[in-house]
Image (tube, helix red, strand yellow):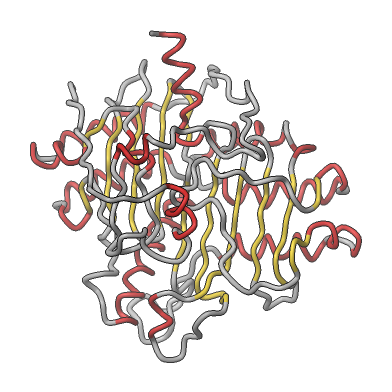
Length: 397
C-alpha cells in the first residue's frame, strides 16, 4: 500500500517547549484548551533524547537481527489502514519521521491528530485493537483497556462523559507497514500515550505513558472495583521497603511527597535528569534481582519475546542503574520513584487530583493514591526508536 505523507497542521501559538514541559504535569499546555504546538515549534527544539547532562551516550542501540517476528503487527497494521475511509487515512497517515511523533500529551483537553475510536465503526475498532494486541502482552492490553474504562469512570464521577470516556483515544500511523523499512504508530489520549516503532524484527514502545484518575473505580460506577497500576505501585514500594537504612538514605531524594514529581511526561523529550538515589552496584544480588523485577513489570507490557530482548539489554547496564525515591515507605504511603540507566527511564508518581479535585470527597492539592502516572522512556536518543531509525537511514539510504 502506498501511503501519502500527512501534512502536519500548525497553529499560531507563541509557546516554548521549555514552558510546556514545565506545565505538562499539571494541566493542558499553555494557551488554554489543550492548545497544540505546531511542527515548526517542535522543530525549534530538535530531538536529542533524555540525557543526564545534555550529552548523548553513543552506540547504545545497535540494529540487530533478533530472530523475533514482527509479522503479526505488520499484518494487523495493514488491515487497520485498509479498514479506514479515504478521509480517515488523510487524517491518520504520516511519514515515518514526522514531527507528529512528539506531539502527544497525557492531558485530556488537547487537540489531537489521527482517528479516534469514537469515530470508528465496530470493525475499525476491532482492527485498531488487533494492532495493539499484536505488540502488547495480555498484561499490556489489559492495562490499556482498563485505563480507557477508568477514563469513563472519571466521566461518570465528574458528570462530563463528553470529556472523559473510553473511546476518546486517537491512532496515527507513521510510515508504511513493511518488512524492510521502519514504520510505526501511536495511540494518544487522556492517560494513555504509547509510541510503537518497528525496524525489521526489532520493536520499540517508548515513550509509553499510562495513568488513571481514579486508579480504582469506586462503588456506584459502571466498572466498580476495576483498578490499574497497582502492581507497579506495590512492587516499587516493596523494593523500597527491602532496602536497609543506609541504602534507603541514599535512595531517598526527599522524605516528603508534597506535589507532582514526574519529570519526563509530555514535551520532555530532551530533558536532562542527573542520576540520583541508590546505585544498583551498591545492592545485594537479591535486591538487584528484585529491581529487575520492578523493571520487568513495565517491560512485560510488550509482547513476550520482545520484552525479553528489552530486559536483556537493560540488564547489561544494571551496574549503571539508579533507584530514586520521594515520600514515605509505610504500607499506605504516597510516593514517587524513578529507575534510571543509560538505556531505560521509568517513573511512577502519585499525583494530586485534577478533575476529581472538583468532586466531593476527593482531596485537593495533595498527592493521592487515587491519581497515578507512569512513564517508560529509552534515554540517549532511542525514544520513538529514533536511534534505530537514524541508523537504518544511514545504512540503507
